Length: 311
Image (tube, rainbow, N blue to C red; front, side, top):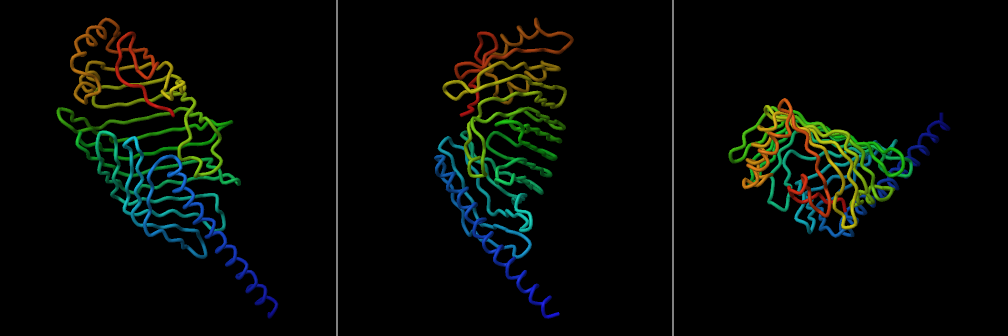
C-alpha cells in the first residue's frame, strides 16, 4: 500500500512538473505569435494575458487584443480564450466573444457573431496541419451597409508540399446598404492554396505569401442571380494575382444591377457592359473570361478594377 501511495505521489509530482513546463512553453508560444506580428510590420497588443487550466489543459485567456496592419486592415476583440489538452498538445481550440471590430481601408466594421470557434490540428513538429472554423449567426455593420450570415464554416487541410486544400461555406447570406437589399443567399468556395514556403509553426503562419491559387469553384447566390468563378492564379513579380478566371452568371441582368448598386462596377460603364453581355449571353447565362495582369482585372481590353495582392 505504501508503495502504491509513493508511486501516485511520484506520478503526480512528475505530471505537475510536466504541466508547469508545458505552461511555460505555451505562454512562450503565444508571446512568439504576437512578436511575429510585429516582425511582419503590424502593431499587436494584448492585455491581461494569463495562463491556466491545470491540470487538464494549457489555457491562455486575455482581455483586449488589438492588431493593426499599415495597409489599413486590423482586428480588435475585448477578450480571447485559447486552449489545448495537456495530455494531447496537438489540438488548439480558440473561442472569441460575441462582439468584435474589423478595420478595413474603407472603414470600420462592427461584428456580432454567435458561437465563433476555431480548431487547429498540429503535427508533432507543431506545424499547422488542419484548421476548422465555424460560427452561428453573424452580422457586420459598417458605413457601406450591413452583411448578415446565418452560419459560416471554413476548413483547411495540408496537402503535399506547400499546398493547403480549403473550403468555405456560408448560408443565410444577406446584404443591406443604399439601394441594395438582398437576402437568402449562400456562398460556397473550394480550392487549393500554395504558399511560397512551408509553414513550420503557428508564428510562421502570420504573413506567408501565396504563390498560387487554384479555384475549383466559388459560387455566390443572391436573390435570383448566381455567380460562379473558376480558374488558376499565381503571384506576379510585384505580388499581384495574375492568370485567368472564368465567371459564369445566371440571370446576369440581376447580377449586373446588384454589382452596380454595390459600387463594384462604375455606373458610366453599365451601358457598354450591358450591350456586350446581351450579345454574349445564351438562355440568360453568361460566361466571362477575365484576365488578371499587371495589377488589374480586365474583361478583354476593359479594366474592371485592381487585382488582389498575394504578397
